[in-house]
Image (cartoon, rainbow, N blue to C red; front, side, top):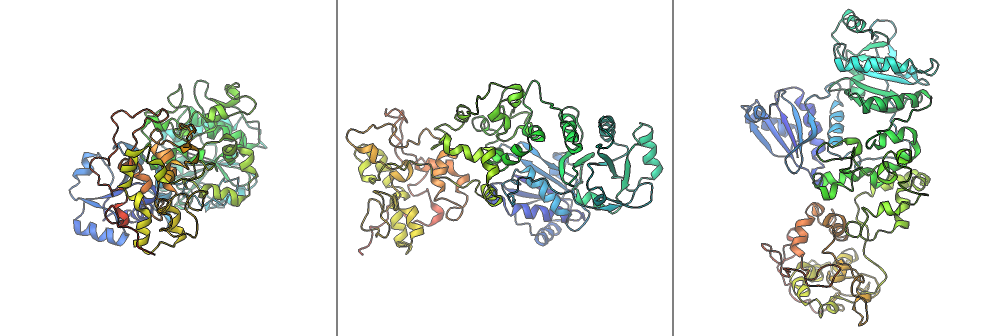
Amino acid sequence: MVIFFFNPEIEDSESVAKAIAEVAADRNKHNFEVVGVAIGSSPDTARAFASQAGLDFPIIDDERGQIARQLGLRTPIVVLGTDPEGYVTDLAMSMFANEGPDAWKNTAKQIREKLHIAKSDSDTAGELNQLPLAPLFEIPRLDGGEPFRLADTRGRPIVLMFFLHTCGHCHSALAFFKEQLAKIPEEQRPELVGVSVASSASKAAVHTSLDELDLDYFTILVDPAGEAKTEFAVFGGVPVIYLIDRSGRIVQRVQGWSEGRDTALLKMQLARIAGTPIPMILNPSGYTGSDVCGVCHVAEYDSWLYTNHADAYATLVEHGKERDPECVGCHVVGFDEPGGFTIKDHPKQLEDVGCESCHGRGGPHLSPTFTKDGHYESTCVGCHNPKHSLGFEYASFLPKVSHKAVAALTPEERAQLVASRGIPRDVLPKGADFVGSDACKSCHASEYATWSEQPHAHAGQTLTKAGKADDINCLRCHTTGYDRTGGFPAESSLREHPDLARVGCESCHGPGGDHIAPDARRIGTIVSLGDKCDSCVILQICGSCHDDANDPGFEFAVEEKIERQRHGTIEPGTGAPLKDSVHIPHPGFPPHAMLPERGAASWPAPPLPES
């Protein structure tokens, strides 16, 4: 949930509200809610503000500031995020861009990044080098003279640092760069350019403060109109540091300052933009993170960004599973291992299925025996197992994450990889013939009886009532095995094939031709679902029809929906009766509850009319 605290009488509220409204438009798509809290103003004023700003989400009246005080808020505009369990996330913003007409876009971008929806909404053109070009600006120098033009630095590496001359963290960063830049040969040395965020401070005050610490060694600019700050999205704590290469592209952004990992990464990136040998600085006792690997392994890192692995953690957030240990382990690096990802500490650099997930801690540099001769299958199946990854085939899946294979794609093909994220894949077997649900009844009488009272068993009849009985687009999802061997024949009428004119057993469990023969091997010839992950596997099966176009929001309610359909009486993989088996509709749900929003009438539906 995103909670937007605002005082409608504060000028900056308008810009932040515009950002919130833009992000809120995608809340159903990405499964989050937005709530506003109007503080310090009358309900009428807040209501008028919300209407003008296009805020279409619930807003709580906190005219007296009771909620704000209870949370200890110290500013009139705050954006907070909470996870499904009510814990505050790293979305906690109280400082916002306010210079320029497009300042709200920077706010919206930061909120999207904190919500983990920036990647999945990317409109990338598919280029391997996704480093953004540094925006250009022209602003005065602190000491006067010709204005500084960033465009004039093309061809030279630049360290651009937004700083405050009285900030201790800025002093630490300046001391670090003074030491590190001196180690780089002069002809390759990046130039440090500082932009003072204290536009009202005097020239003497800035120089004196820096000179006392022996840090007055770099070009200092002032930004009275906030031009550079707006272009580089600087509206929070400082320092904010950008490393820009000779081509004018941003290779690193750091906000704030912490010794340790930040300084190690900056040492490597400084060498990269300078063109000097890059030191390999890995975590000796834990996991390092893919961004560090990418300093040297540029092409591999760039190709990884186009894989589903690079967006793995966002899927957890979207489904509210970021605190579920059973799910988290396969969406992060080194889960609960020494120096790896933990739910409590949550090191952001270890989100997603990163380099060290497949290549081991520190890659071959620290884990030379983790994988041998490029054979990764034993690593893959740790997560891509039958419970979580039905239909996984190493040979066909490998090209989807292979650096070489992804790099060989055209930009358009790589862009399609991103666009197709989240689209269900066909995971059911295809080798056997369809036989219809009546063939299952003799052995699975209880399951059949439960299913026959549910909407799936009457899917064809709903088409007839809706006048869609001949619509191919509808028949594919309302029949069993449409246009497949033994399945519902294309160009046929629903009345001609009543057993297949419904969403039958094989629609979810796969074709049963190899399962029903008298001498057939029962276990392994049909897909059991009772032992499968609802989100990882069953959603893939259901989602091909229950998509956003036909059943919006289904993927975020899949567990509840599955409970309404659950009818198994056999222990998966054993054939033994299920202990305490339940083969009636889930308690509290009527038999037709699976699709209440689709107007499927009461069940059982009337018989099909004569043709």
